Length: 261
Image (cartoon, rainbow, N blue to C red; front, side):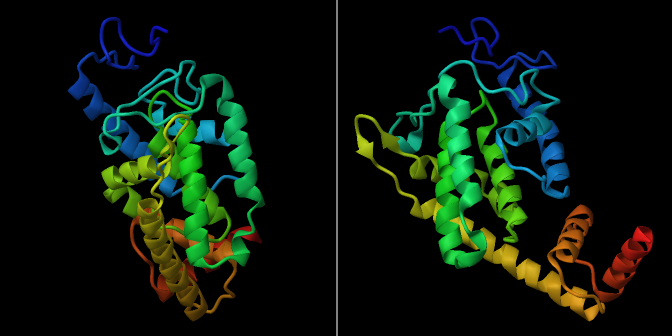
């Protein structure tokens, strides 16, 4: 099938700026999406984590770049993977994207995240992360969308995660996702999930250490530590890229309580 996403006789994705130079488009996309991703990191997580919410995340990240932001791909795709000797991951058929995604999200939602150890959470989270990525719902931007969505999801369960670790090691993360998704109809199961599990565990451990620091400073500021209070301070810290101390936290939470009256 002819790829409707690219300019005729090229491999360059059609874009809102009508850029038809590959390097220029790459720079433009990186510039706009980095801003949108930074905004998402400082926003409190969504109240729902369904298929529509996943599409909303893709739209938010790529709204400045592609007209089809937030819309699932309408063609089947392959991508040559150096880590697999040039073969492609077997992504979901375009007609199965919504069905496959909903199955994975349902299993994620029904996992008892607060009853398992952080090591078990890392393994489980990595598996769902790879499964969702293997669906590859969009023509472009799947890794950034899935990582962002799943990070918000796990934090909604009280397990904070250092998403900067994924951003700072983007190539490693993508290669790890490829390795964790390598199941084939003809070659069988060639997965190596340990690389993804390692960075996910590191990110979760850093996230939990951060959560503990926030809990401690809330207590020092004279407030009862609740998930809601932790969430407020975490997102405030992320917004200002600074871990606020006791005096700042006391003032911030006091002002929040005054606003409720």
